[in-house]
Image (cartoon, rainbow, N blue to C red; front, side, top):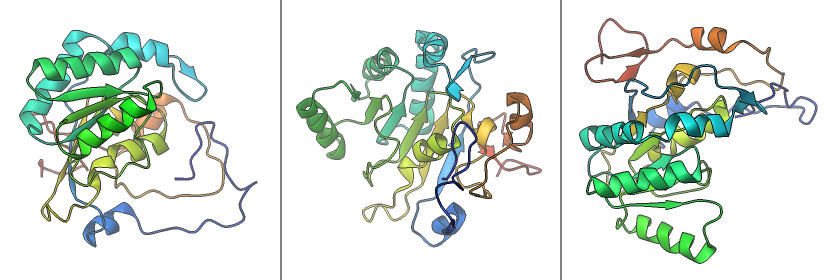
Length: 244
């Protein structure tokens, strides 16, 4: 994903870009699990958030999303669409992640929170418990966007809006690792912050380049993304006459 938040290309660093197989092909060939993407109505007011260093201002985002009603809505949709599945929740701040884990536990779902400040031993123990299936939902801040391999994990909850295409792809596809113990695995992605309307679906075919991109306004950027959301089941999909 050679995409930088500041729009600058990597042509000044590299001479050649080798394009690998697209995500759709990897799914078709069985190297990635297929998925269902749901985008329930965004309850948080995410309008007019300042942009800081290319992404939404973290402090403003926390104020908008770290509210009991909004977190409760995310828990309710997990219980409806992904109950019993192991999942990772990507949160906006430490407090937001802690509150999200507490809300899941209050709903009877085993959940834990870890972040970059969590002591290493505690973090390792928590991840190990998650791998064993003792923890169903692991809430975190900027820890598991990349490099985590838990094949049994089937659900991803996007609770932090981002302008970063790279971060979106990394986070949304964490649950798409294939699992030899679950050959019919289908990942569930729950997007509560409208990231799919900014970036498209995880396996949308994209043209990668070493050249920089022309900056567009947020409104124009979102107008280029053609995604429909079913008003009955909240499934996000490419434009079609009916919800697939």
